Image (tube, rainbow over all chains, first blue to last red; front, side):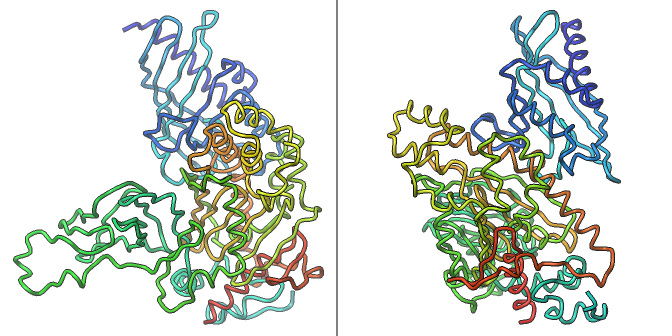
Length: 158
Length: 424
């Protein structure tokens, strides 16, 4: 097992999670490749996300709009903004071809907003591209373990 | 607002709770009224259960609810659609736990009783002990009455109510118009967003015919769209209208230019659709069909509210399911063109994700507003919900009553039907 690589990808993904929990959205937007996609599927067995209905299927343009919606103060479901703390663990490098990597990990996120504490658990699967000594995100797939159940509004970035 | 009635009588005379211009707050909060609604409305009228594309072939099924009762919608070998209560006739277990799928039969997991797709009881394991004290013909899965219109499947517990066609009445021509967004390919429902909110079902019912909230509640959505779309959605002071269609149904026309999607195909293609049109042409689709697809791709310019549980809402089906007096489940079923070009269907999928669902730019804000209504409704138990907007300008129309686009005419229509059914 390449422990140095595991440490590098873990540090990168922990940093991403910390940015999201602390509202550093400009820095977060810069973590992505131009063609990167942020996907939250509904059906846990789905593989063709582009041609099916998801909760989110964001390209760069939609990611920017989503951030603007969260911070813009125009949306009653995100004002007040939810507070989140996410824990990321169980990192595993699935594929490494020298340039591109696929990494899977577990995410537990706690959300508090308006008298309500919620909990979402997901498998995260990252496709990362090596870039200037670090990585860029080519795809982030968020597979909620209850994705095919009824959900309530999620006013932040998973 | 001095028109108070004693709280003790609220549950006993529903007719007193609905006035021409307002309804009593207890319609959102009284558990006894909720129980009465299940009986007198959801178990007494036509309730939408599926679109036929959800059960395309023999053996295809989906599970859903009529009111609070679990049902299976399934197409049998003769291609008939059955709506069956999801409970074994032996000791009551559900015989199907999947949301959708394909099967040859339904087998109870408890003792193995097996039912055919039409609900008939086929197999009883170890039947010897029953000797001749059981007749399988008397114990099929309980079947509801089923009728459909233009692909929309409805079911009812009542054998003696009017045919679906009469119940829909003037709404039928709007259903026909809505289905034109299939652009000749037909309508398909390939998925849905499901979510719950802590509020009464009628708060959602009202919202589908509420243009008034759009620019305020959906400000963040409007900030995220292009100029042309923004103009299109600037309809509150526009030429649109709301029409009461009878039997609690109503239509809210927000964008009159997009009522008939087969009309005006010669008009210039709007700028925001130019790249889609170019991709369709590259696939070898002829110009007239390109225009038809592009005109249909964003959906119809109206919301058709069908009492009590479904709406044909611009580009999707909105389905509501009552959970309790203070909780409601909503399904937003996406619509694509069945067998249509993938590039156009992707456009529709992304459009749906943009507004709908728990991470959409619209639904969570609606949900927040409805939650606030339910919370606020706990204050002042003798207060009324005002529904008099657009009343001064309301006029008789061919099918009922019509007023301006942000009038509460559609809500008044729904509550008059509520009053009629609850008083029956």
